[in-house]
Amino acid sequence: MRRSWLYEIFRIVLVFGLRLFHRKFRVVGYENLKGSEIPTIVVGNHQNALLDPILCCSVITQQLHWLTRSDVFKPGLVSFLLRKVNMLPVYREKDNVADLRDRNEAIFQQCYKRLNRGHWISLFPEGTHKGKKSLNTPLKKGIGRLIIGTFEANPNLQQIRILPLGLEYSEFFEKDGNFMLRIGKPIVLSKEDYTTANKAIWANELVAEISQHIQAVMTDIRNDDFYEEYLTIQDLLHFVHPYNDWHENVLIYQDMVNANRFEQIQFLNEVKSFNQLSKELSFSSKTELENQQWQFWNTLRVFITVPFSLIGKIIFFPISNFTENFVQTKLKDVLFRNSIRIAFKLFFSIPYIFILAIAFPFFGINYLLGVLILIGVGVFEVRSRMRFDRFKKIIKYKKDCADRSAEYSKWKAAQERCLGQLKHICDEQN
Image 1 (spheres, rainbow, N blue to C red):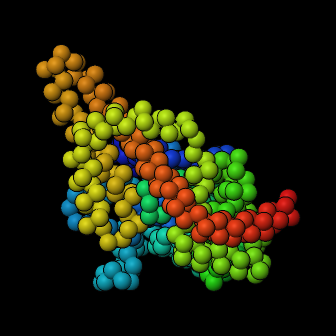
Image 2: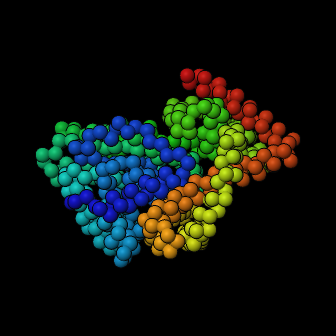
Image 3: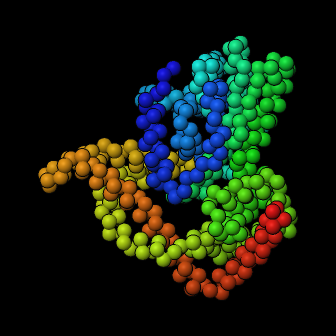
């Protein structure tokens, strides 16, 4: 099977979009991508709908062939395009397909062939996304079937590699957040291990091992009773290490979660009380951190760029207005909104720019130069709008803190109590 040219086009456009519409985009563990000559199965945690595969494809230059739930393969153009970008439908019991087993068997046969030709198969073995920072275990057993079938399809195959990915988002539902892809050390499976084992037991043990490798590179909050408190701890950790980049603190946090460093009932109850107070008083640690990190230079840039960004907002208003109306009214699953927002704004803007640029020659400006000017205006508008939105939020927060100084002092004291205990836990970790 040849490389898909449509995949490459989509990948280039979406890589640009991810970096344009988000503040920070970090990748950790690039060195673990080495070894592309070995048939590779990419697995990761599934938290944020379409953004998850887009993020994976934007980082891994090897084309990924995705096992995807069948209900997104709408008949006609949608199904055609999805297949052209290497997606393969997997059928579930709730899809109510009469020949479900036969269809899935045909898809797995394609996977075996593609792996043995050197292609990379990718899947989210949790089976569905959920907008929660935890791994939905046990993983689906299809990953074990995929590995066994690939070995059986090629008697000469000596190794298969499993590459675990951990996806991390600062926000699931809001725009303009940060995200990180953490690439773990691969699991290399040998032909000898496969042939000497009881296949059923070996597959079950392998699925459990894959779970552990995914958990090691993601934020896996396993304490459901204190789930919200664990999220708050992650926010508070940025106050403990204020000079670290966002992704550096995420790595520290993930490792401490995996080591159960926060499983201290007195501390968790303190954070729970702080959470309740935060909800009652409507103060936020995230906004407090942004307020502390905001500098005069950021404010100056806002005032300098606002007039120019207004021009961009006017020019691209039809695209933005249509996109926002669509995602707010048509998408029931809110986890799809950010990915659809990025895709619509990018792919609708491309023909829109080329059409608008027709007007430039009437003003003595070269057509291609006009296209470049419009692209620059669009990029400038997105980045300045993100900065302006943060500025408005911070100004409102400052005013709120000043108007309710007594309540803010009470909230701040509760936060400091949590930070004191968290710093102590971090010092013990070191």
